[in-house]
Image (cartoon, one colour):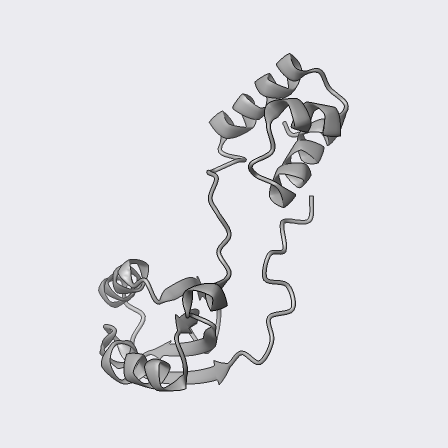
Length: 151
C-alpha cells in the first residue's frame, strides 16, 4: 500500500526524475537506506514504471500539435485490435485514448508544421484500419505540458 511518504517520493520524482537517492532522501525526510528501499519497492510494484527525459517538441522541430478525433466504421474486436496496433507503432502519435461514445478515439499528433501535418493526415491517418471519420483540432497553446499525477 502506498503511504504518505511514498506519495511524497513520487511527487518529488515527478518533478526531477534524475534526483540522486541522497537528495531524494533529504527532500522527503528519510535517511538514504530507507528511501532507497522504498524507491526499489515502488519500482518493483509498478508504481514507478520507468524514467525518461522530457523533450520540448519545438526544440526538435515538432512544435505543431493536433488532436485528432477518430470514429471507426465498426468496433468489432478485429478492427479495434488492428487500429490500436497501427496507432501504437506510429511515432507521430504521441498519445492515444479510447473513449466511450463518439468519437471512438482521441489522438495527439506532432508534426513540424501545418504542411507536414496535412501530408501526415492524408498519407497515414486516413489509412489507419477501420477509420470512418477523422476530425482535427489544432493546439493553440499547451497549458500543462508536464503535469504530473495528483498525488
